[in-house]
Image 1: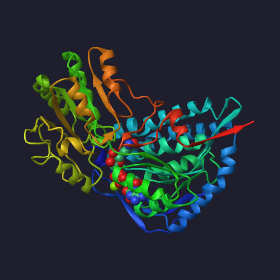
Image 2: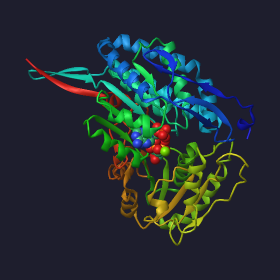
Image 3: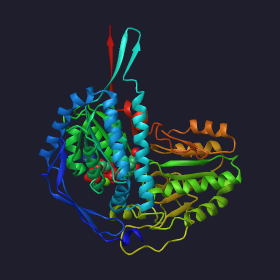
Image 4: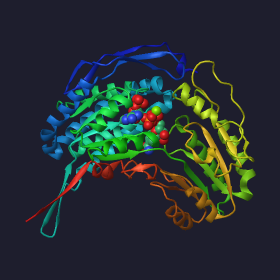
Amino acid sequence: MTDAQRPNEVTRESELYIDGVWSPGGGFDLEVENPSTEEVIGVITQASAEDVERAVAAAKAAFPGWSTMSVPERTAVLRRARDVLAERADMFADIINREQGSPLKLARALHVDTPLAVMDATIEALQSYPFTAELGNSLIRREPAGVVAAITPWNLPLHQVIVKVIPALAAGATVVLKPAGLTPLAAFELARVFDAAGLPAGVFNLVPGSGRVVGDLLTRHPDVDQVSFTGSTPVGRTIAGVAAATLKRVTLELGGKSASVVLADTDDELLAKAVKITVGNCFLNGGQTCTALSRLIVPADRIEQTEQLAAAAAAKYQLGTRLGPLISADQRKEVESFLEAGAGGADAVTVTTVQPLPERGHWVTPTVVSRVDPDSRLAQEEVFGPVLSIIAAADDDEAIAIANNSIYGLGGAVWGSDEQAALDAAARIRTGQVDVNGGAFNPAAPFGGYKQSGTGREFGTYGIDDVCEIKAVQR
Ligand code: NAP
Ligand code: MG
């Protein structure tokens, strides 16, 4: 537990960043906990209803200036913000290690370097973004939506903010951010980055607070033009309902139950790679990613081979170095409920060994359960913890049917020795992203969900599209 043994520091944030200045927040104080140690590491003053009003008014007032700035001018500010963030990368990794629990190395690589890559891809997309186009006698204008409220989850405290805020700012929209109550510290530092980069007053505003109060106020607010939400499917449903009163634009990035499908023609070498990458993807960030490949679907006659490979791969995920704790005591209880007998169906067997757990912190052993019933709770519900289900399929058609047997449609993977057949299988999977034979993450490619995984797309050009209205001017 080397990371957790460092001396504890308590960060005090009593001022909110609204209209380009730091001013005292009017809400109550909330403690932030280190999930690795259960120590209090922060005390954050929440935004009051009046602070939310001030923030929305500031964003609305800043919109005419920011939205009409030239692309080179907006680009210059975003590039400065990117450079300041890059200079402070180790500080962000340290904060995320403490507030979210990721081991330091992962905190840097996943939680800081990935959003930096997304920033780069967005800034690049902005350079050639078609804000105007000709269509017959029409001029087609893409115009920023206005005031965007961003509501973000705790699993990736910086990344989930960057993927919303940077495309919105690139488009010329202004932003009010409500970060997750469990992980607000990185958002405060991001406000300092924007301030140092010279972002004009009111273009970005920070209102920490609970979803039920601050998130709800933003979702109802008549001067908020768009809500961009990442989080759970139940809260996404609530937000869509509340936003309907003002018919504001809604982007929802929700849960997933993504499948990694091994086709029958997969050779032994590729199977070994498929299992290793699926285990790593499922356990990434302690299993707390929305795209986690949490179901591994393999030909029935390869199940024993897969179990051995998966158990060996999982044994490398040592707690504290490669795997952090879960975010909270509640989340731990929830994840443990999926490890109870029966959750995976009558034939389910656990193929991994239990690791010793530290006394403090919200740790669970990374677990692989095999021979899981595809209709069981374990195969159907999002675990949001390091638990992989292996499911047997009679043939490729059944494997794809099992992959699609989900209310979710976010990510997925296909493995097969015949690449064209694997690409054909990818086309039959009803999700927003599919990786074939280990295809790498692309920060410019559209990201978002089919079915109950959400609406809208983030990243690159598609992320800018998502915060733009489209106007046709005839002449
Ligand atoms: P959550 O409970 O849905 O919360 C997400 C955010 O919404 C938090 O900031 C939360 O505030 C706020 N919120 C809660 N209730 C609200 C309401 N009634 N109105 C407005 N805002 C409200 O999700 P979580 O527990 O933080 O994150 C885990 C879930 O997020 C998982 O299901 C995961 O799959 C999903 N997720 C999806 C993606 C994706 O891109 N598709 C990415 C990451 C996570 P407070 O919690 O601070 O009160
Ligand atoms: Mg929650």
